Length: 391
Image 1 (cartoon, one colour):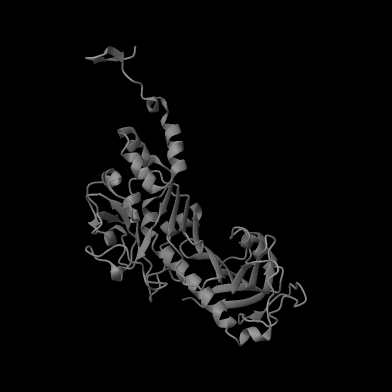
Image 2: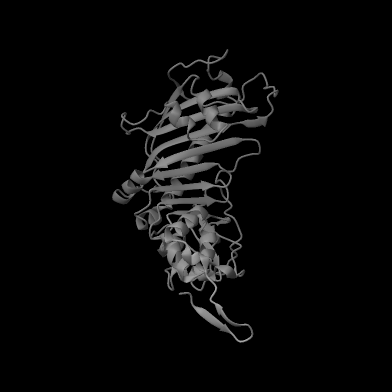
């Protein structure tokens, strides 16, 4: 029997039905998992007690960051709007901006008391991640009324988290306009693999004419011959003398440093969320992607990472590398890469039973199109080999 309520003017009427109450929890959780965004989920928390109880059961969460602040710039009274100046400023305080009063309840969702940001990360690092939530009562608040928490704090009450994606506002590596630099790194307790794709310039013009002389290169030992085209896939001698070598070395080392710094900052999140099956730390520019699957996440929990003595990042092990180069690469959709370079990296001690660094399917799947096609084209050319010591 439906309940009734009394209206002194119009008489007695049936009580209105809340159709959301008719939806099963499983369906609502499906919707919440499709939403994913942690800010939107915070807003869902304030809708009802039922939503507030269901949000912690969400398995898929996306954390988007609005700006980056180094620890040198951070203080409780400082503005949270400045961005870390250096490309590797001991990677990062991450700040969510623009979230105001509607998210007050997310502070309650996080709990009444939280430790300081550095303690929340459970590390002595001079850098950390932080999330700004407007109107929350705990944490440090800036002049704009935005309270800041570490991602560890924000994610703490997600009890069944399986898929986590964190997106930085931009890549760490400062590159000139028109230059292409993309990397993907997979980590366990240390680096498992890294793929780097770069080009001195990118054009959306199939009729672009490349100058007749080479303009870049990489100093390496000659490996297997996979010729392609009139140049037989070889790197011209001029590439070793006009700055191309230096440029490729900088790209490779810088990408590895950026990847290892990102990995270092994820320790506390990984330790606390043992249900995680996938973790991705990327950036809005699409410059770099750090990935960890369930097996790699468990490896880090069992075997703690080795930190670099020089900076707050994971130690990069001794490496074997393969490099492919093309002075000019025409991609099917009209994109032209000049000075295209692909570098595939694996630890020297890694078992040969794992996929080889020259496996084209592994390399091409690291990048979205049209750059996956670029990787497939490059691995058909001459292969060059090098080694790098741990750093």
